Amino acid sequence: MEVYVRMNEDVENDYAFTVKPDDTVSSRFAKIFDPKEGLTKYMVLRPSIFYKNVPIGFRKSNHPGFLTENGCLLFDYDADNKKYLEDLKDSEKSVWEQLWPGQLVLPKWEKDWNTIFTYLAVMLVWLYTDLPDCVSPTPGICLTNQLSKNFAILADKLGFYELAGKLRDEIRVNQASVTTQWLFFVMHIFKLLVITAVFYSGLVNPLSFNPWRTFMVSKTEISGNNVELKTTLKNIGWVGARRAIYDDYRDTYYKYRIEKAGGAVLAYKSGVMKIASKPGVKLSAGEGFQTDLENRFNKNTFETMKTAGKFILSEDYFLQLEHDLKENIKKCNGDIAEINNEIRRFRKYGLFECGPELSELVALRRKVEETPAPEPLPEQEKKEQ
Image (cartoon, rainbow, N blue to C red; front, top):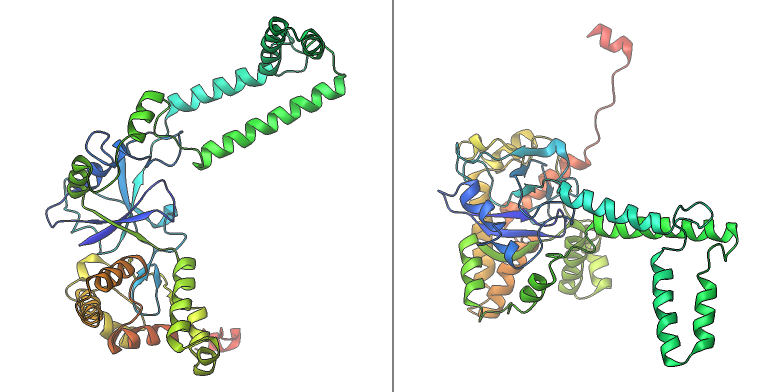
């Protein structure tokens, strides 16, 4: 089966991996992040520089998820909320015994305190060097002053004596007013906060601060000709598909339905536009990925929806998904490119076309969503009951 693993703690980086029946957490997921045999050798997978490169464990998200218009599941934006996370056991059970097909796995990242303290030390030293001259025990040692001194020396050697004199005048202690000194110091604090935010958010997240390693990795050929990389991807079960977030799904599905209807006007008249603009249903507690795995083979998704109005997962549901995907592939008439596009779209968004079984399933779940909750009884009626 296939499950999704989140990279960089980013909702837009949920990638598909194949899992074998006998795979454990260490033999499958830990291998992905192995610095010698996994993807960590080629790319940055940690959230930011303030975390270690290798996770200390893995958790699954039990958020119910989002039911698409054609009966597939997407991950909710709150899927990584702590209340929905459950640790995966390594030795007691296989991955198959702990996860539903298509479920989200999240690495458990450990803070790298060595990097954090080193970063803080560098920032504090930098902040100290930029203290206003009026309060600094060592005025005039800031980085810009050091650069100006060296430029002044260079200007002297090149014969630009007037320029050299101006540079030396600018770096004289207390050359600027006290107000100006404090203003520049506040600007420096703001600059450090921006830099920290950039690193913390992962916008700048280098593979290594070792320039030689970074250079060597940048020279690595990321293509089908790289035998070592192909072997790595095969060993870790890499599929190469990324699960879409809801906004991406909604926009893509809307465009697909409008084009299929023959344009916006026809889509509006046929009622397609209304559904396509807000497709699917957000599931509630006890549904979707919160379904008890022990009931995979003894419960039926379609019967439960009709009798209890809840969308649960079951083997019957996944068999129906597989059947509908195969039917869509048959419509490609053997065109390899179309078949690949259909499979790629299924892995990213789910089905865009489904059979009557899944259509009815979604319609029933939508009906439950649209049914207003019963109004609370007055106190008098409660007492009479």
